[in-house]
Length: 114
Length: 113
Image (cartoon, rainbow over all chains, first blue to last red; front, side, top):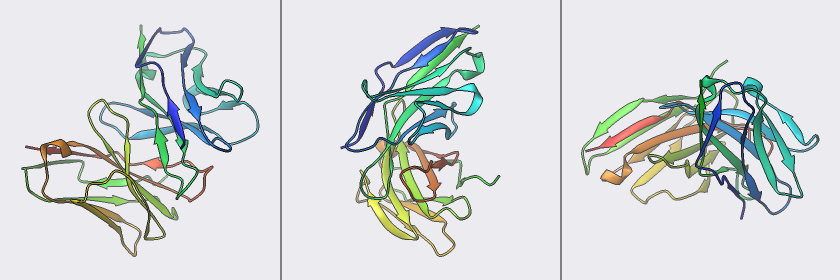
């Protein structure tokens, strides 16, 4: 079965510092990996995805993610954090069977302090 | 650009009542997904439709049912509501395929009292 794990419940970072939100995956076959962000009382917004190709994927709002096959990881990164980046971040993987529903990790709350 | 529209945004119901949530997917998207997100939890998959046919089923209680209509909008019907049904309910739509991202609506916050 496909699954993702987010080992950190919360990540704290100072504004202007680089941030990393961790995600590891367990899949059979090729991984199709996604990051979403959720602001309070809002829906999930798509940030970026890895399908194939370059291991460094660039997405919205200056975020990027690094796919590492040997470590089965897909960590979300940003070179310089903003207070407005504070939100809940979900890593997700596409199911290999059925009709490709997204399977989410538990989420990581990112807090960026001024 | 058009997004996924959900209605209502907020809903308060009493125990044992019935609720209907509506979802209007992005035009030309052929797949609709429903998710439930409890407080402090990740979204849990309930059910999906591909081209108006039920395509996948997750942890959806028997008290819940859903369908997709000819105009592609979908409805989630919830009966005999319980306090534990209080949650955010999200609808998402996509073009079918493993490499395609799903776009989520703003959600319906259901509170059962």
